[in-house]
Image (tube, rainbow, N blue to C red; front, side):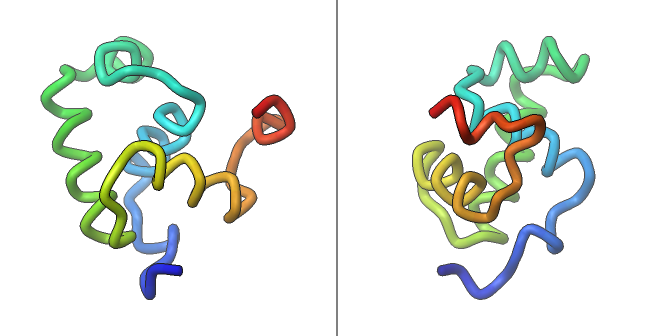
Length: 77
């Protein structure tokens, strides 16, 4: 498990991480948060670096294992 935790993420990074973990694309995340897909990419790069992850799949697994899926989303996977 990465040494840093979700507490190291900003509020925006947490929102992006949760939406990506639900399976949304960068374009969909951007539309949901009213930011550009490039901004989503920037947040993802920061998230991956902070949590020592390499992919969306690793991020989704991390979110589920951390119990950070809102509204019972983890139960749907």
